[in-house]
Length: 476
Image (cartoon, rainbow, N blue to C red; front, side, top):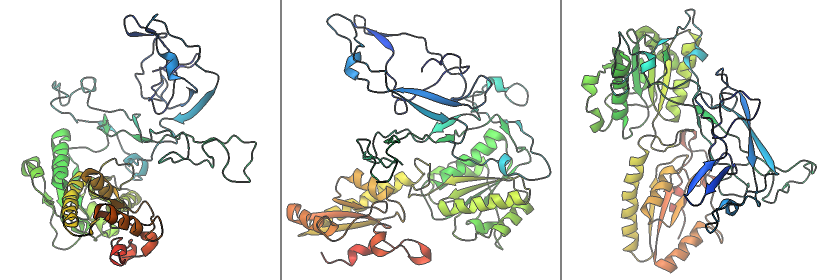
């Protein structure tokens, strides 16, 4: 926390260590081991980036550089601190805005609804027994409910500020080297070659809002599961039903059977979902409402939504399912329907943007380690044995990478995100041959989409070809 600059009306600024390298402003009393602030920080009661009026505003944060950590350590012998070596002359400024252009777009029903009847916000009845033990009238007053989150709350997605484009994993857009010199000839030498610039990205914080736009008493919610099975689907269904019924009082919840086709295919009947018939569902595998691929006829799906008077659609699925959810939302908006389409990320590949971890990923990593362990035992039991394990990951290597790191028995891990050479001095084949000479065996883990530059990218239905084929075609 730092105090606000003079003349500004904001109530304070919260800084995180990776974002701002602020020199310590404190004096240390070595005799009692206590830090005494030179100035009292002002705690921010509102959302970061807001003024006293609640509107988002830009801010410029002064960043101090060339701070020597040793200079702020107290001299234990005399109980004094020296700041003579601190250099505050060089100042950089990061400009960013919460609630502005740096926000990751998150479409709300308010943004897409084009119907004749206006959307009217209403107080949310959402409350849990632990957070709202007092009930006065039909619902707990907002003054007593601490369950809601502010519309202005944001989550910082990118918290790493790189100091050089040569740093591991750096995502810098400036053509500079570590010394600050331009890499590319022809660029203006009069301009400062900024090595890296921190560009923060914010996402809206998830959680219940104090105002909602559907009447829970008349809401018809639907849950549909698309794509392949994944550990945890039934737990998600149970949680959604419990939140809708218990938290909001929604009385009609339908499970759409066997994917998007369940909306319109003949003979498909919805499964009524309640808290009673989903209790304990998290202990069962599979999907209680079934799953399926295809059936994504958007017009027929929206026709069914309109006919059944569905207000909310929860789509459990991965990239393709979410693309379908987006198309359904757009068609509902064109027809002026007040329908909220909510995507629930489901993929063991863990490859959905802005999601730290999708459910089912941990289980996939644990199961993959069993296959790796079996391959390692086989390889070590044979003369110059090589164990090759192909894992799921058509366009991402999260399962392969995490399983390899967790097992500790993998010599080579190949993933789609990193190109590699099979032949040559630094190629995979020569590396494996050196492993055989050194330890007598090798264990290789391959994500199924690895090696696209070797095999080509055009597989069946336009999907990447399986990377495992690259190894079966080679002679070791």
